[in-house]
Amino acid sequence: MTLLVTGCAGFIGSNFVHTWLAGSDETLVNLDKLTYAGNLANLASLKDDARHVFVQGDIGDRELVAQLLATHKPRAVLNFAAESHVDRSIHGPGDFVQTNIVGTFNLLESVRGYWSALPAEQQTAFRFLHVSTDEVYGTLEANDPPFAETKNYEPNSPYSASKAASDHLVRAWHHTYGLPVLTTNCSNNYGPYHFPEKLIPLVIHNALAGKPLPIYGDGQQVRDWLYVEDHCRAIARVLADGRVGETYNIGGWNEKPNLEVVHTLCAVLDELQPRADGQPYASQITYVKDRPGHDRRYAIDARKIERDLGWKPQETFETGIRKTVQWYLSHQDWVEGVTSGNYRQWVGKQYG
Image (cartoon, rainbow, N blue to C red):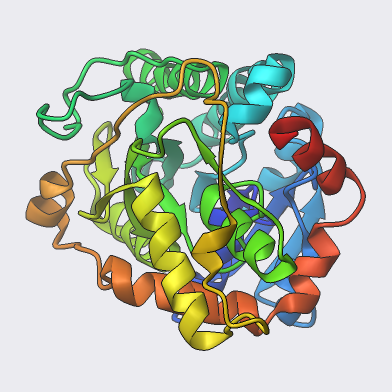
């Protein structure tokens, strides 16, 4: 048995590969374009593992995808491939349209051709699982209920609009062509291998380097935080027993303002690796101009996946954030490898 997974040299995808192979001998064929956030160092420990087959390529390359499908005959395709950073989507939305919308369309068409030619029994068992985000639902006021699967889509950034479009394509390919799809919409992930443009790894990296810890606006933007390995376990549950055509929201039940997250990180760093001068890392906090159209609050109602599939997160925010900090402290070589060159130019452009 084989799975074709896309975008698995990135943050969530590489964690899925590690989590899956820790509990299964099923082969994973990993298709990744290796853009700036795709990093083979995330998969270095699997270099000689016959269960992991890496192929560099684009989900929009129909000839390549068709060849992989015909050669490896996967029982499922899991689509992690995406441009995923709001700030980058504001500066350059074209890449997000191309990868998240056009790329998903081409992938769906390749998979549809493969699936249509399968014997009836294999067609019934086949799944296309599309990994998406809570940002497609828009923003919430302080007293609004969390996002349920029935919430209207109201994306507010080029990134979330492109992911919303990809979700709609997946839904349409199911209802129009019968492709057996599953969609997951997750809250903010954190954990190992997280590219340090996002809040938590950026703060850890800057704190240790003695640099400012940038906080957008007043820092009271609220997010629901989900430890990445919990997310990966949820995806495995959806793949195993999810109902075809359904959407499952995956959240950590951890709503936190960004400023609180940063203070928590600083406190853990103060304990695990104190500054040489004895000052708290929180003294490095700096407020910067808020980004355009910054959504105020996201929150996931994850009751459906718990009720229907028996999944709930194993990590609290406190246990997950400690594991995350410990991982970054013990993998400074990985951090150094991904924060050179273009990354430094990006940080300078984004935060001045």
